[in-house]
Length: 374
Image (cartoon, rainbow, N blue to C red):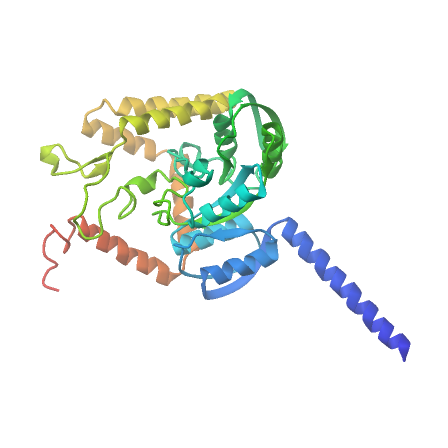
């Protein structure tokens, strides 16, 4: 009687060990297998955390339903789907910190519970004027990308921007972290690169993921991660007020009828231009020669366009955008948006875009022609 029981116990132990080994292997590779339909984003994230053993923060302003069916898909790709369906952005975050208390403040700041700048994490609000991918949108940008870069005696913020080019990530030094960085990285992952950087800065480090809104919110005034686009986004920070009234838009917009010098579009202030230039120089300083040459050529192209008449500028831009490589990139992004959303979500976005167009004076909106009697 005892032998069958022992055999059953042994089989259960072996099965449990096999399952644990498989789960550990899948978690180590950050692979997600999941089938969800119209499920709340927070419930989906909890399921993903159990599979990957990663911590994924969901800012309190993030909301929405998610639908997808994936098998052994990398976490980065799954987060792309979630971000697309909920109209948010995701980032891998690598804090460089000194103590458990400061790390706890970092987590609360990411969630939007406390102001980042007032609790030791001003760099969490650092703006990226390049946008998502930006001028380097053709580079591989995921946590598995291998980094090869040489950083010789550069300031810490230059080093963190250089690393961010290789992944959809933000290295966030705690306030008071400073110094010159010298690193030679050859085919290392993002976590390995951050580990070397943290050691040189005499800091602890951690890795998290975060889903955050593009329009801000929370107690730090919405400056939770610093998207440049958010500064002029609809009803976002610096965008138009919800009810058409309230305070004027912040500097950077030229309002008013075009004939009176207004364009109703976003234009960088001198301070923003200076920051953009600083970030560009920081990026160029850590690029390989061939990549630096390509980026500088693009930079010269856009600088020259500013001095052209509107008609010539439009023609030059059309020529630039019709480049086969760039058209392929645009098509890939468009197809990604279609693939990662449901038909209902796409229809809802079309309706929202139509409404925003009306608000800006489009057909049937404020300041636009009537809607044809419908």
